[in-house]
Length: 308
Image (cartoon, rainbow, N blue to C red; front, side, top):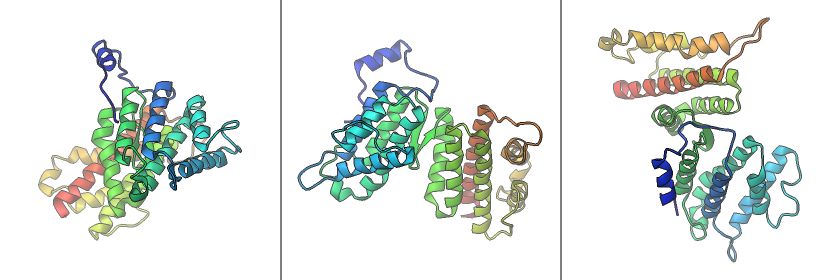
């Protein structure tokens, strides 16, 4: 069915009653209900000889119970679907609400998508449309999450997300050589979502370093697996990943690469704390995460333009 631009929505936009700043800990009930509708349409209804939807809901229910260390999510449910989504509608822990959304859409994005023949006759919408609507509903309610690369990703700025983070995830997920970097970048996002900001810094830099190592490996440029970010950056400049005639103009780029994510990580996240406790703020973690995305995207595009 998709998202409809109803009269009431248009009037709210005219009155300026739409959220312009993302929030993360309040998943409003109308959004939860809309997500249940999407899930139901994406799985479809059981029919004679076809119990795939209920099997999927049973898997979601049992997986959540095992991870949460409980036997059931709901007292005397009529079905696994009711157990999961009644819990989802009433749960006050926003992270567990996100758990239900992520697990449901992981199955839609993988199992339902890959077995198209069996699901096609019972579902109402395809996987891509379900994911697209979910992401639109998040935006509509001003809730700062998106489903990307088979995970729920926290979004701080829609512009930064669409221009840096999303293309970076698409790039890392598309090429096998960036598999390690993709895992590290997704871990950085997961740490960020759970407010583990020091860990976010560490994995942001790991992802950037892994991309630089992958580029060196692909181009057969000598490097060591334990090379620091600074050494890797030096190799990329020596090999003229950025053409020589432009390097003078890009001198500030070298400074940015060398003093951006690595410095933030080394000072705040990468070493022992010593006698004093080091606090990494959300703003610093966000900066490192988005700077890593922008740098990864830049280096990969320069390689494609100049060496592929």
